[in-house]
Image 1 (tube, rainbow, N blue to C red):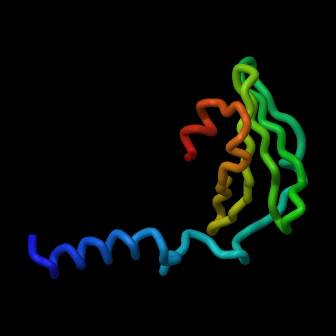
Image 2 (image 1 turned 60 degrees about the vertical axis):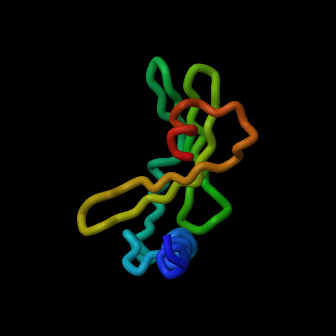
Amino acid sequence: MNTKTLISILLAAILAGCLPSIHPLYTDKDLIFDPNLLGCFSDKQTTWLFEKSPQSKAYSLTLTTDNKQGRFDARLVKLENLLFLDLYPQDPGLTQNDFYKMHL
């Protein structure tokens, strides 16, 4: 492998993870806060607890499955007439559930 090829590969690898997206999926103007999402939602196996985050237009989500928790920063995004929930894992020191591990 010649030097030019090696430098090109290294440069591509470094830049791939360091630059912000040129076309992000959403911006701050697309974020909404719906107080109806606050509270606890559960079924037989999973509990989703949404709380108001100190950040503007954001939620703190605690997801519990099989007595294991995963904590996420959550944002509600409105794109055209559709709503999406964007989750970002937090608190890696907890005993995480599989849903949490899947997001890492």
